[in-house]
Image (cartoon, rainbow, N blue to C red; front, side, top):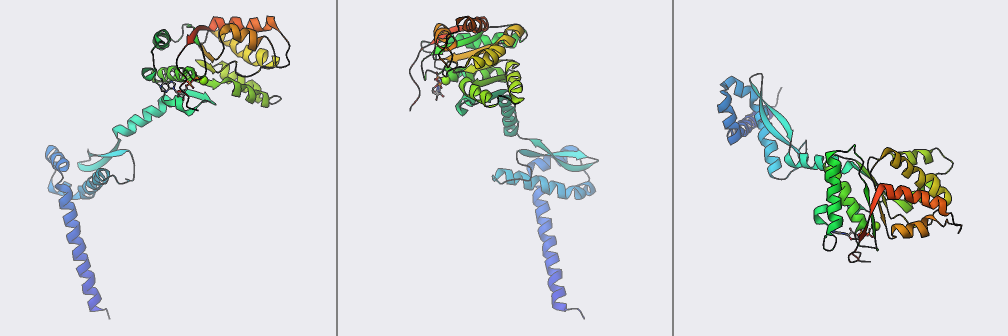
Amino acid sequence: MKDVGEEMAQQLRNRNWIKNYKELIDDAFADEEVKAFVKENQLSQTELARSASKVYEFVSIKRQIKNGEVTPAPGYQPQLILSNHLIDVAYVPSEELMKSKKQAEIRARVRTLNMPKAIRTAQLADFDITGREEIAQAAADFIDTYTANPQKFIQGMYLQGSFGVGKTYLLGAIANGLAEEGFRSTMLHFPSFAVEVKGAIGSNNVVEKIDSIKKAPVLMLDDIGADQLSSWLRDDVLGIILQYRMQEELPTFFSSNLSMQDLLEQYLTVNNRGEAEPLKARRIMERIVFLSKEYTMIGRNRRHS
Ligand code: ADP
Ligand code: MG
């Protein structure tokens, strides 16, 4: 025999549940957006009854977002739609999500190798132009000219200046500016790249590494001249990259603590064994001069350490 007490309790629970359910649904239908939607679409009582769970879902998720709670689909906002005369909920990406997706797409256009993270946020608009108006103008002009016609050859910039004046920052700002216009670029810290390539000697990776760099639509070689080159790195790595870019007329930027003249005489001419190879050095320098225009960057040292 059934336990009568238990049966009654069950009924009460059901009744309570039904009462709560009814309250929840009434509450959901009282939402202003829901009311407007129902009115606009002139739904019948039957249709409304069959839509109840969706309306409840819509209002619950909206409330969760408002309270800053994590929803089942973070970043998406519920929207009422009509589907076969019944209410349904569609999830549309929120403005913030669209923004952060767009930001990620822009960021993905700048390929970096061994570059400081800070350049990710570098902006031409934040570049301190005092005494450096010509450089800032040239950078902005480059972005405009390239954007107008990416197929046409434009010289890049050879930024020369002492430690900490913001050469790397400016290269980052140019790369980010190009990315916002939809263009890809590659930035690499040249001394680190040289070490990596040297470490990969003998494997197929060397050719692959050099190929992927030399073909970049816009290439920025940061801190060239900061290390000591072997003849191999100068002629078969740097030389190959620059030769290709000259032939293909691909925009190329450099930053260096050395002027072009010093780069030629100190960095390119004497190899790491102390041997002078002026003719080979000149060949490389001719390519750098073809690819870029020299700018001297002045300013205070912004590094804290
Ligand atoms: P360089 O490459 O000439 O040695 P950096 O570009 O590395 O100099 O700049 C030195 C420091 O100053 C970095 O930490 C960089 O992020 C910061 N910096 C440079 N220019 C700016 C700027 N316009 N606004 C904010 N920070 C800057
Ligand atoms: Mg630098």
